[in-house]
Image 1 (cartoon, rainbow, N blue to C red):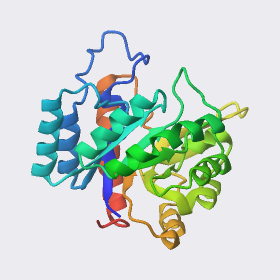
Image 2: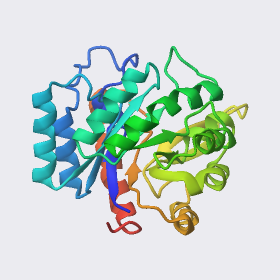
Image 3: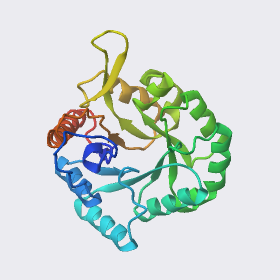
Image 4: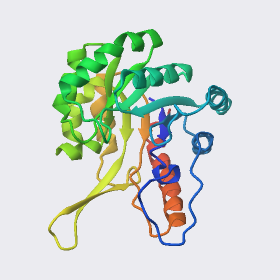
Length: 277
């Protein structure tokens, strides 16, 4: 297992459309693909997962090659991520990108804002790209993300019955389906081909009628990271652990970006005590 970062380690730096900071704040210069690789090198991690908030499929062929060269120069492995499974050409395009960049997986979130397929549609769609995955040597890593309960995701993977499909296990996303990390690991641990470590804190709102779920630096929240790694270890498998952050914003964009940077550094320092690779 190698430790890595993601474009979702730096969600604010990559750009968060729709969020308004204090009036008059200058718009930040969004983090670039090359900039994300440089941050990984500075942190001393060996993997960078580039996902849908920093999309790759709009890059020219020359820019993709330049990104691959920069990764090689910095000793970094790239993992590719996207969102949405339809049309099939979308997946096929990203499978080709993953193969070109040497990514062993293509992490995918099934849903988009416009498309929320039923499990049966997911199975039918993904069955159609199994030959493409096999030819490219890329494993599709389906991320648990809000809507689907873990048992449903397990059923999707088992229905496909292919070594070219597994699970990208996220430690927080399934709160959206009323499931915590213990349930998700219990249902999906044996299918994991990629891991998102995302720490969190749950607290009552000041008026007591409700809860707020927020991110924390790894090791400073309610996620028991040693337990997580120990629970997954018996299942074996060669996959990477990717740090993601849900960094609550500050009123000023500059302060938010500094906080995000600090949280990434603190998280990597902590995770290095558990994941030396």
